[in-house]
Amino acid sequence: MPLKSLQWTRYLFGHHLREGQTIWDLVPDYAGVVPADEMERKFARSKSSARAPLNPIIEEPRVDRRDSELRLIEEAKERMPYEIASMQMPPAEELVHAIEELDEDMLPLEMCREVAKWLCPDGKRLEALKRKRTDNPNVPWAMPEHYMWTLGHLPACAQRLECWQFLRAFDEEHMVYTESVAQFECVVDGFMRSQSIAPMLGYVLAFGNFLNGGTRLGQADGFNMDALNSLEAVKDQESKDVRHVIFDTFFQKHEDKAQQFIDDLAPCLQNVGRSYVGSEVLKSVKSSIEGLTALVEKIKDGSAQCRSHMDQVLALIEDPADLFKLQMPPKLKRTQEAIDQLVDRTNQAHRAYRQMLSWYRAGDMISADWCLLWDDFLVPKHLISNRETALRKDVLIPRFCKGRPLDLESLRLLWQLKELDSVQKKASSIVSRPVTFRRARSRRTLLLLP
Image 1 (cartoon, rainbow, N blue to C red):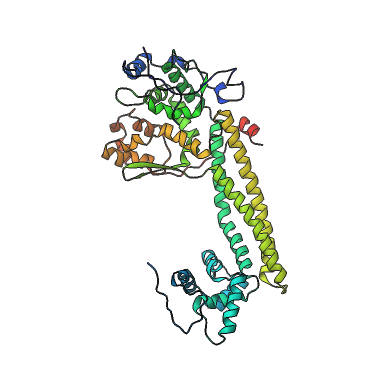
Image 2 (cartoon, rainbow, N blue to C red):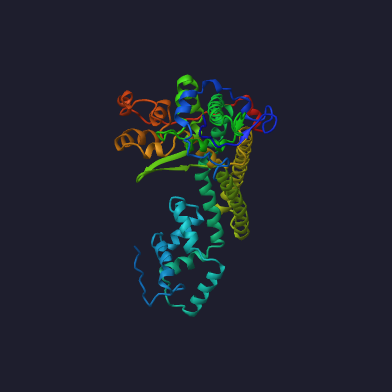
């Protein structure tokens, strides 16, 4: 009986797959667990339908304009951010003192950024201010120009601020970046140490080979990972796709492996944020190794620029007791050492990810797509957005769109493999708990992570 086909790229041992180099060595043969009668009943092709193509389709403040004030910036719209910034600052003389004394209480980081952006003049603007003062020696400055004039007399003011804010920002951001890399390491470790992903892939392979029997896509020893997206296209007469049967069979016959499968994928699934907005489910990847690598390289470039700025400042400081001269160089040295460690760790995580892709024979898929692939495999958007309002609001959204870890019971509800009545009492008592991922150092992980 002709069946609807599952579109994938067929991999064969000895041709596409080499022994010991991919996960397909570990995938069991589950051909015997496929319920043939149910599959033929649900996924038989109608006589009128043709087999699908074998290749898958890829409000603004007022500005006082008194004529008695000396202005360098005349146009009102251009002046506005300068006026706003100056109104938020302490008196100009106190501001200079705060910069000289590196007073973080007087000058918080965000205020420091505003000073550097709007009120600290570059050489060209400082020369323009000097000409204005020469031509108008008795006219008082307007407020923004007063700050520029005062700060302009602090040697290398702009460079001081650039160094200071870079080092302060890194103190705040270093932990965030380190934690992000650690979380991504957990994602990779989850896939490399798992003993439950191979059995799940074995089920997909067995059901796919059954569907593709008698065609050139059949009798495969493996398949391309993005074929997991093709499962949604193989639907029965009730518009349920083949994953309903795969998950129902796998969850019943291997409940312990099913729960372990969800646990092994937890770091990956937790890296995908799900929210329900309007009438649809939105997904976003929280962090990617490519994005982290770019951010860390940007920080490394920033440290080199900070070194250059610092050299300019130190060349102009004559006072041996100057706080900038005493505190900033050793602080920059410690920061550069931390950045070097972060760069090394990020690059190592990136290498481990590429090795993981090779193990799964997943090509050069970017990490965001990899995480979404597995989240979509288990939690398709339409299974939440297309359900009855009460069920969606009271059960599915709290379980799947509020950052809670997945569990087998929730997936059974989502895929309609379990009646709601049996878990309604538990639904109201679900308590969100934090998830802590432990990096397992399996033998294979140690080999693949230099």
